[in-house]
Image (cartoon, rainbow, N blue to C red; front, side, top):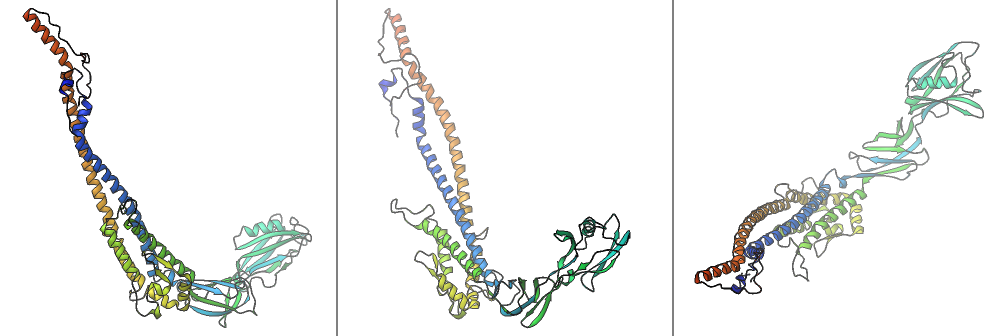
Length: 478
């Protein structure tokens, strides 16, 4: 926009609008500043999108890595019991797929002994006027450890004081006094199940206590695994089947339990669905950038990013990867994972479960194998490169965007400093011009008066009615 002045108006004493003149002079450069600031906003928008897309790509890499992991979800095993009311099981990675026949004929129990009832728990049980007595408690059966319990009158010669004494010894035995309508009884419970926790009173001197052992207390669990007898001090049995922990719930010698160790379909399908969801998130984001808005006829903020086009092509190439053999499971479609027209994937759960159930070995071999040529092996290798912190395609894009933002920020800062300096100089310059123009009518009057005095006259120059004789900040004259 040009700057023009009305000469007649300039001489009437109103001067010029200094700020408007300075703004008009600086307008071309402030326009460039606006352009750069808009570019800065665009870069910030693109940086946010790139960061989000990179996070999604990392999530995809994690999901594919799980499918390529030989110890991952595709290798996970599970145990299925035909009689979960009798036993269940958990498996470790060292387990071998197989079917076992198990018969549980007895559960492991804790050792227990108890006395006949006495009148109460606070009366001495020493006999015949004796002031002392002795008990011996054996823990662990005939080959176990025997603990001597000396009884002293006034110290531990009642059921309550004897229970307190035993509990203070830390023998792995809990003592308590049980009171009911028949009286008070001392009960001892082992803190260990099976034969190691079997309890027995082997000596009883000078007391009226009569100890009883319940049938089946302090015995090992008894079971057979594929016809082989096995004894366990605990109802959580390890070692009977390699890599498998049996959890015994009840005993029934007449009901064989079939325990099947096999591939965990839930872990596998979850891993596959996680992969599809992560892949679709990345492809969906890329599609959004390359879709033309019919209203504005423009693509997304990253529509012109060639690196994103390259990433999209790489991912589409990876999902179309096929393997040879593997009993017909050669590509995603053969597993029920179908490629849509927009590049996303859809899972046919029925077909997926059928493929997994029919041949779990071939299913796993499609994704991973010892030669590292499986679908997930190949995809994982590509994603490792694509997500590399230094050379990964989106990390490079983010670094370049950051560099561009930094350079543009410096340009904006330098131009702002330059404009501030120019504005100050121009304001001073045109303020002086304005002061001169505002003083012009008064100066003209003084000169005319001086000339009249020289000529012997008293001229009275006419000053226009709209002329200001008092200096002002000026008004627009353009």
